[in-house]
Image (cartoon, rainbow, N blue to C red; front, side, top):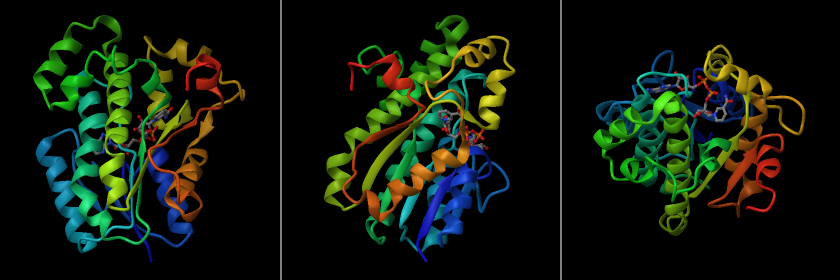
Length: 257
Ligand SMILES: NC(=O)c1ccc[n+]([C@@H]2O[C@H](COP(=O)([O-])OP(=O)(O)OC[C@H]3O[C@@H](n4cnc5c(N)ncnc54)[C@H](O)[C@@H]3O)[C@@H](O)[C@H]2O)c1
């Protein structure tokens, strides 16, 4: 039975992905802050190291797939935590588990980024380089000066840096035979989005924003794309960012792709 590790497995997209993959005959190792096979806090360096060690131990050092869903929305405080979970929490798992994936059967990783990843470019990302170099103090300093929308700066900056981190790894991962892709969801009905809708700063903008397809996604619609990217039908898909956004990116940037 193929073994897939999933961060953020207790809720939203991670839970929907775990359910889908279990139903199609995969064994799942869930990682989350609570209610998971492996309980770990990915906002902390020691939590990330403990999560990697626990996955290696529970998998016997051999993993067929990895899905990185754990993340925090723009409403969470402190804002630094948004950036560390969404960027470092994913990158540490990717890098720490590459060896185990290389020993797996047709291995693949799917990283959940966001359509927000293209709201800044790498050149204009105010926290991208600091995240990449692991300089948390600098990230905190930039966010402290980012004004009322610092949560959004943390979120979009971390997701932009995360997609860049995936793209930077395609040569090394390709050589080891491990496929690596991102999905970029638009608005998905999950607790993370509900917190945004209830927020006085972000709620109206989220409510007013309607995707061309005319509704928000259900978590299982993102999970279906993740399942595809992990599976044999995507055997030549590597280094891609797949937008699952109801047409938002094409609407916003028809000439940029
Ligand atoms: N919901 C959306 O509209 C949307 C849109 C684009 C991208 N995303 C991304 O999808 C991913 C999943 O989000 P979701 O919408 O399913 O939200 P969610 O809140 O339902 O699930 C997120 C999960 O991550 C876990 N998590 C948070 N902090 C953690 C930490 N420090 N350590 C370990 N686990 C932690 C949570 O406990 C939770 O189970 C996130 O990366 C999010 O940024 C969501």
